[in-house]
Image (spheres, one colour):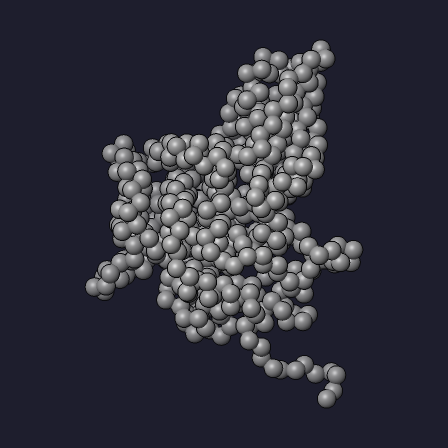
Length: 494
């Protein structure tokens, strides 16, 4: 046979896709911890979305593409009056959820925010639940939403454990698209072939670059990128449900597949390292691990690698607040991922640039005792030159132990330490925070604060009686799980 022709033997679907499809279609969730955590995650995620509606830069993106569009059984965007097709509703819900960088987080070889998938899940479930009732069928319940959230968390998180997309320049919203595609296809009633087709298109799409997350190009796209990815998952699931053929060898096809095109290093020295191999490394089967261990972002609307730095800065605030102009040096001891993602010097161009700057997120609570979303806005930054003065005095040091324990399965710490030195030769003690308050190791301490955060976020949008009604419902696991999805979403309609 000539060497100048391709063998056209169509392969079976790549095993990675088959494993995801089989998990979504056959796994039964029984873990009480996962379901309880998913309930808290649902509360927190919706609350983050409601809070974001206070920011015009976010709300300008919301609503139908064509003004005045009427959609039968349209999916609602919580906190608004919009009723949209599920694809645009997923975009909008995902946008408000992610806008303030305040929802849950997963940190491993890859980073991400698994609750970003709620955009697609809630939009599809609300639409289908309304449609079922209109057809005289039983609606979907919130338990279905919680199950889908747990599975989306698991798909995104397990793939992220040992596979670093950031090291080849790809953004973590790739995993949002894959997870949303899988669970939304299941919600739509996909069979195995349809689900595999949808998943294959999620990988063949071409993927977002991380350019918009890093200096000097950091910008607001990082606040809507996950909504865009979850929305794309809904669209791909719909395409597959219409009978579109899949791309079975999307990952492994020589030269043209995802591994060869997008998951390999052009630098030969890097490509030889085991962690840079041209295939996914999956260290455990899919279950409920990720939801059970997810990190809640409770205290600060800040990139998660800086959460413990913010907490340390708040601790030091009383000691330094009256001596800010006497500070000679601030030493931040941190881990490698924080240095690679959010350590930056120079002018910060916008709010999105500031909430991904370790130095900025440390300087504000050092000076003011807290860090809230408004502290990233242009007006606040311009009014307080002390922030940039403090940034200029900061030294960033990596602690190898912090870096090591960040990746250890039984720890997964996100440690930071801060020490302040003054011009008179005195200094504070070093304040070390190993685990943020949203970590599983601090769950008992964190949940009451998570609930308080949810209450405060509800109050930014609704009157007291409705806030109480929603909060009491969300506290009741059994009643929440049994509620029809469209009734639940209706509680958040403006």
